[in-house]
Image (cartoon, rainbow, N blue to C red; front, side, top):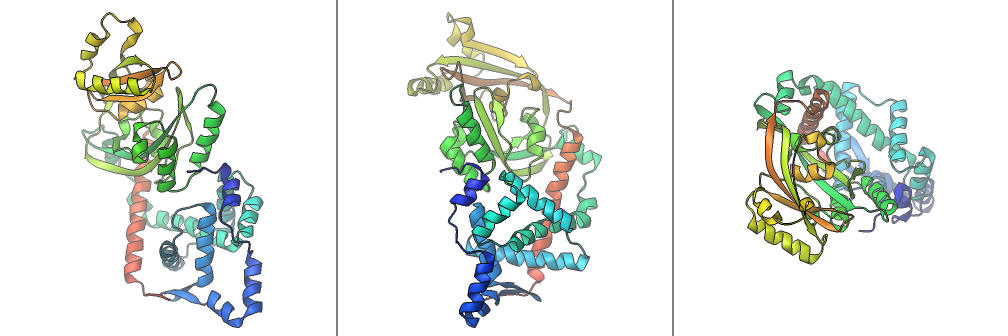
Length: 416
């Protein structure tokens, strides 16, 4: 996948129709009354409202230019049907976003691509996307957020006991996160290049785009699976990373995170609350057996053989006998004291499992990392406010999806 350098280049390099909004209208009105009629005639009827063919074209072009997911004909039709249903519900409740809030939303949208608002809107206009399309899109998103919050916030807020359970402090309950990762190796010669690449990945939209980036650029073993990790206990992640991850919305990507010898990015694919506890730990006991040769085929083959030879961390002492002292490191430390790259790998391991994702000595040494033991702790590494907010947002999302499903079921929808 060829990543685009910055949002501006993304827009400029997209397949663009060189027709501005005014040109579209002028063409329709001047060439043929039938053409104008077809463009602005109903494509879909949603209860008492309509979606025109022009709106369908505009939304599809908007998403295509941004490189965003959901730009197929069927997806755009469903999105605009949902927009009408949401607008009808919000109109009945008397809720709409203020012009100031909409403008701020557009400003923030543009800033993600390092563009001014005028530059952003001008580039979209050159691609045939009208300013009204952009404003309507942002206004709908903001209004729906306010509507859902006003209607369901009191039900979505967790109790103190629910926060305790999510933190694993009550012996039951806890949070798990479903992540995808991109881990890009870095050395003194590649720092600038890797930083630029990581910034481009952070701007990606959608799960497929992030997965493609992981497949092409990540050095982690998960690259063969598009960077996708299994469910992880939030409390198993490095303490400094926990509030970063829990602050993400579904599909969002972290800013680049610096690790020793690498830069990491994570995308949130899911968050769930468990009925059983997810404990926190005061101490992590782990071992690193250093193999010369870095990630060469021979060294990786030797590491694979070692996996079969050792059952637990103590077995590594026999392998390290008569070798230099720094070949084997056995370390017990609190989670906050463990280097972030090591802590990330340990969070993926069960007891006596092994990771060979890390290197040292500027890539010349492969780290055979093994998790020995974890010591339980009832302390609190993640703030209660972060956990409460994550639970609230998760529940608001569920309420919103449930309400939209009900609106669809009750609606009269006629597609042309």
